[in-house]
Image (cartoon, rainbow, N blue to C red; front, side, top):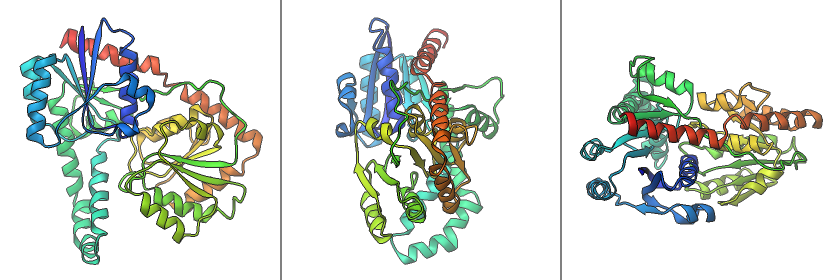
Length: 394
């Protein structure tokens, strides 16, 4: 019996949590071989689907580091985990010590673009500076130069990622482009390192609807530092009169919700609806013609592969190697827009919406085929083999 534990700082919170659920669901088919636990510091059961709640028994841990260390020590002593998978989050300085005492292998699952922390550090600092005119002026005149031009943000991001790599036995990334990036930044031997590429899986959709409505959707968190849904509202302002037959639906929730509602009123946006959080978004994907992603930071973008699986044509800023891999080749499996031109995105969106119906139908079949390059069973089996390898071979 192999004992696997997944740790998430927040659960659920986004795509990474769905992948953990996929892996747990797969391993639960082999109850005599695997025992799987999920632990988190911030449990949000209201965002879990009925299926997730039925399969996952998530243990909530304390928030402060001292109590977290003591709780993890007790968990390790009780269960003697063979593999501990940390899915994102900051460095846990005590993890290596606890793992070594218990003979546990540590996997760090990096579920974002390489050195994404660099962008997030800058974006969060910028957002905090908007709270007052003086802070904003200080950011523009002094701090932004230090963080962006002088490389303060990149140095911080490097230290975070390097520490995660050093205390893990295996470091998983989402695509080959990220692996090459880390090999370069960490000065690793390209042929001998502990980085493993694990694509995010996607489910086949039975009975895909190819007869779409004139609906454009965004599916995801309403979060300023990374998702930047405010950009999509400004883009919609540019195109709503050019696409009078289309409407825009925002599916998701988050801290940015009230500001986005206010911005929509300020811009006098028409045919726009905020649908809120939904545990099941299949009906939105079934009817939508186009999906949009306007993030500043994006590792893989499960909303992109979900769109593809449902025959929805994705349009996204080309923010990362992961996004590029999912939508490549550009114009065949989706549309990539150079970051972060709102006008160029608006022109691309109008162009896609105005394509002849036969061309849209061709693209819908294309994107469905592309999504099937990431089958759930194959990728979950790859995770299982990784766990077996770590336990058997050290």
